[in-house]
Image: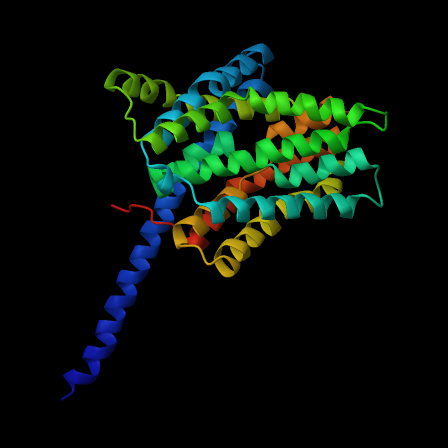
Length: 339
C-alpha cells in the first residue's frame, strides 16, 4: 500500500525528466543550427574589419552568391515541389499585409521628425528582412525543403514590393524623380536573378516537369555555396558600416519594430486572423524575425535618405538577431529533427 502513492510521483518525475530532456535537446538543436550561421557572419565581419581581405573581394563573394548560388538553390527547391505545396495565397497576402503595415507605421511615426524620404528609408529598414541571405540557411534545416515556398513568397513581398515602393517614396521632391525611381526599381525587380529563379522554379513545379539529373545535380552543387558565401559577404558588408553611439537611440525604434513587432504581427495575422496551419505560421514568424537586409542600406544610400540611421538598423538588428532568432524559433517550436 505504501508503494502506490509513490508510483504516481515517480511516474510524474519520469515524465518531467523526459520532458526536460526533450526541451534540452531541442534547445541544443536550435543552437546547433543558428549559432554556426551567425558565426560565419562574424568570420566575414572579422576578415573585413582586420583587413584580411579587400572590400572588392567581399563584393565579389556577395555578387557570386546573389547572381549564381542563391538562384540555383531556389530554382532547384521550387522546381522539386508542386506549386500547391510551395505556394499558399493566404500566407502570401497575409505576410505582405503585415510587411506593408510595419513599413507604413514606422514611416508615419518618423514623419513628424524627418522628411518623407528619410522617414520612408527607416520604414523600409523595419520591413525589409534579410530573407534572401539568411532565409535558406536558417529555415531549411528547421522546416525542411518545403520551407523554400515561404522563403520565396517573403522575398517577393519584402524585395519586390517594398523595394519598388520605398524607391518611389525616397525620391527627392523633384518633379518626375519619384517616377524615375519607380521605373528604375521595377527594372531592377524584373531583372533580379533571385526573383527570376523563383518564377522559373514555380513554373516547373506547376507543370510537373522534373529537372534532368545532371542539371539537378549541377544546381544542387552550385546552390550549396549560397549559404556560406552570402553570410560571409553579409559580415564583410556590416564591417564597413560606420556607426556611432548617437545612432543607437535613433535606430532603436526601427530595430524593435523589425525584431519584435513584425514577427508578432505576422503571428496574429497568419495564426489568429487567417488561421493557417502551423507550418505557415511558423515559417512566417521566423522569416519576419530576420534582421534588416543590407539592401535597405543600399537603397537609402542611393537616395541619400537617412543612410546613417539605416546602417545602424542593419548592424544592430543583425547583432541582436544572433540571440533573438534562436529565441523566436524556440517559442515557435518548429519541427526540428532532434537525434
